[in-house]
Image 1 (cartoon, rainbow, N blue to C red):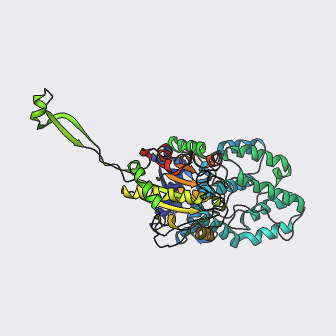
Image 2: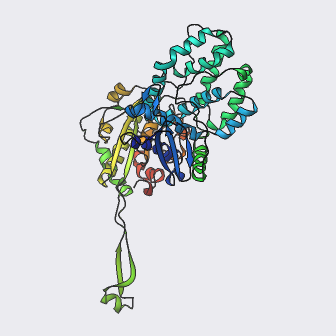
Image 3: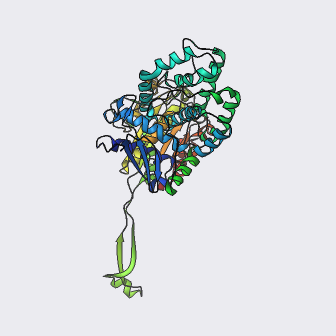
Length: 493
């Protein structure tokens, strides 16, 4: 009889991680499906109606999962990544082209882990812990098998797994070869072909897999390498109705996304408060009504108070007031560009730098939100990004020179991915000139709630890669009207 464990300390963490992923990639269906995680000697994944059940092994490479939370989370995320892949179509290509299962597994693992690391930077380290555990347990064996191989086909299996685990922080590495390898040019070309799957969109996996075996037909007869125990045989899924709906929605949301990037971690720095600029205080008054969260109310014809004056005018005298629901306090994530390009003068502002205009606008927005009882999370970015430990709006008062000393002078928007996951319900406002490296994988829901306030001369079109709306702020005096176009009042509460 297979041993099934409900470990009280680790299962809530695993189920929370799985639900976080599914809520982001399948927001509609995930409301109807409950994720259940069990740890069992029979490590096989299955779906049932109403439940996505993820079964995990009790041990992995000799490590007890219940004792290593990071490793367990990494294995869970690895498995959930297959929810985002067209496994049925991949299996059809595999069978039609006689592609060995081990090669399909490697391809799926490289693509799935790369995409998940791009969408959920928090899980990069747990996935790396899985690869590090395999590296310690099995990398030397792979190196020995590669050295003993007398043909490329014989070396291909252990070589593919060597590329998977030689650098744990990467889903795959093709930068070098093991010390002794047969047919080095072919082996290097093979590693490079596998490495390209890091940037393969999920919906194109069948075509890319077909192309891979066409380039290396000798692999059809290659024997299977020794996978880490607990990481093989996890790709057989039989979804029920709700599980299938979850897969379809997740596939639609993520099928065209490309992973493979490296999302830098957001730095945390304590700073002292700095008074807002006078222009910002003045502008905040013009914005205040945009973020006010007032009580609602309505009157209905019903027994209530008797109004004599209304009765004398012939109006119905019996009315009753019903209190409305209070709108939630506004909340906003505000990102301010401090890159070198923001030093350039902004047209029509007496040569004031773009940074000066953006900082005043950011402070005005933050003041108006706070005066309405709301909260602002402020992040300042360039090559990297930083925020305070409390996630408040204090970074908006720091000088550009100090910011650039902390986060560089270039422009990169990849920090947005981590913020989107930290604040899944917040609208985002990014003040920038728009030019810079975009995030690798952007969910449509994240793009829709992210708005770009472009400081001229800027690149509004480039901001379309990560924002749903882009508006140019040509004059600070127009900030109120620009905000009205950019963020509808209903989206900030």
